[in-house]
Length: 315
Image (cartoon, rainbow, N blue to C red):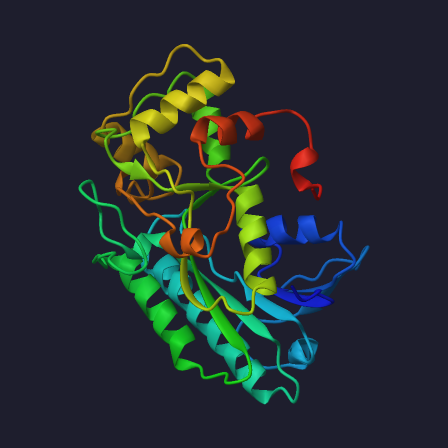
């Protein structure tokens, strides 16, 4: 497998980008993070200012890069107001277009372009698993965002740069992401089923997410769409029971749909993030013989609620 020397990450200060950056600190890879608010350079990490839309001096970082990774996009953990919807679209589509244009302008373009996408592109599914080949595309705002995002990525032709699209499920992290608010409400005694409880959650441990990104960078045969999720989605009821057990919380009051909708309005998010059934599986990763570190939710949750900091260190 090729040895990586330099990687460029757009959106490297968000949750997913931070997962990769914190891991790469322990390597000898030079990392350039594209961000609107640059931080002081440290270790092997440097920061380059960009606006996520227009070409600029940041594009020089892509010359001779081994990989460019795009995780740029406003979080969907918000109320879907007109303004937020516009930002959810623009931050994804503009950044993807800008990176594609930058690659096209390179004399020596990056070897691979890895772009974020979302497993929520598939329909609400209680009845069947959704893989990359037979998965059925859904409808609604979130799905439309995903489709336009992927269409933008596909439309940018980069003949000398391999392209990989990651339809990522919920990434469970020790210090960020969706697990943190779920831990908080569970400790308050509201860790029962949310809504009907039979809706599926596709999830992946942050360690596997990090390793899958590395897998895509170092396997030249990998291209196209990959579902980034564990092979074993669980129901919301199973997920919350597993979390209660790991946190040693005996009481888990359920949150019926009406209460969930009310609570979502209070904390400025959308109930769809909890109520939609995402039953997504990683067929192409399994076919590529990627070895998951965490396939069982109980072991993943147990690891993530530990108090130690070992998750960021390299194996």
